[in-house]
Structures are given as structure tokens and as C-alpha cells.
Amino acid sequence: MKLTAFSDVGLRVMMLLSGAPEGSKLTTHELADGVATPYNHVAKAVARLSGLGLVQATRGRFGGVRITEAGRRESVGHLLRELEGDQPMVECEAPDGECPLNHLCSLRGVLNRAREAFYAELDAVIISELPHSRQMGPVMVQLGMRPPQDALA
Image 1 (cartoon, rainbow, N blue to C red):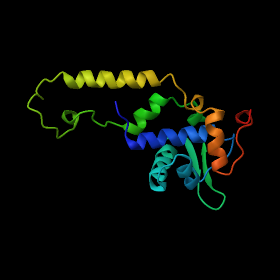
Image 2: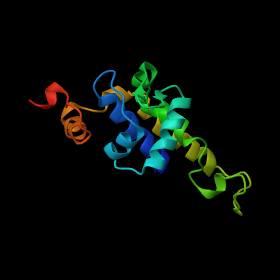
Image 3: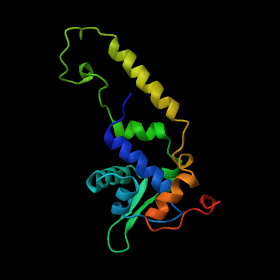
Image 4: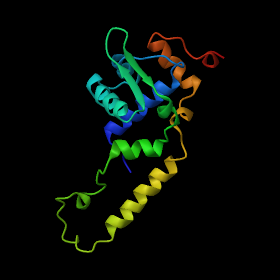
């Protein structure tokens, strides 16, 4: 299964925020630099994550984005269900999908079960468990922040 670019950006933003020092805020520009993604894509992902209550975004001079406690506890499976939505895996799943085999087709059911098995496997993985200090240290330095102490060891 291939994730959409939007879900990929959303996951990377959540990982970066989860690995940042406790209580720190990152601007959307810093997030874009940290996940090596264009600003506009990151801004859209942040808006969606904020709407889900997983991040808190504050505008203005002292604004920024920080992960919420709900965001730290969120499972990767649930987050992907929210970000991916009902994207069809194959064209015949789309409302206007044209397939001569569409009548009583069992492929859709099989694909839906496979997609759910994929998400179910990721339900056991919590966002805050993903980043580790050695991974986050260089990114924090790149963003002008102090790396986590255990990243220096």
C-alpha cells in the first residue's frame, strides 16, 4: 500500500514535533525545513493536524506549532485513517470507477480488509515512540535548537 504525499508529510511533522524538546514550538517554516518539504504542503498538513486536535498552532510573532498530549498518544494507524480518508486503492473503488467486472466484485472487499489489516498493524505504534534522540539531534541543530541531551552521548 502506498501512502499519499499528504499523509507522509503529516507523519513526518508529527514525528518532528514529538521529538522536539518538551513544550517547544516550531514555526511552519522550521517544520518545512525539518522535514524537507515545501512550506505550502506543511502548512496544509498542520491545518489538518490542528483540526484533529493533534497539534496546537498559534499565529503571530511568538506563535508556532506544538504537539498536544493527544498528538503524543495518537496511534499511527488512527492518524493514517484520518489523513488518508477514503482514498481508493484501485480505480474501481472510486464512485465513478468504470470496470466491466464491477457487478458483485469481491476484489473491493478483499482490498478493504487488507487496508484495515495494514492500519490495524499500525494501531500498536504510538507517534511519540517513533523519533529517537540520535535521529532528532541533527535536525534540531539544523533548526538552531539544542539537541536532546542523550543525542550528544
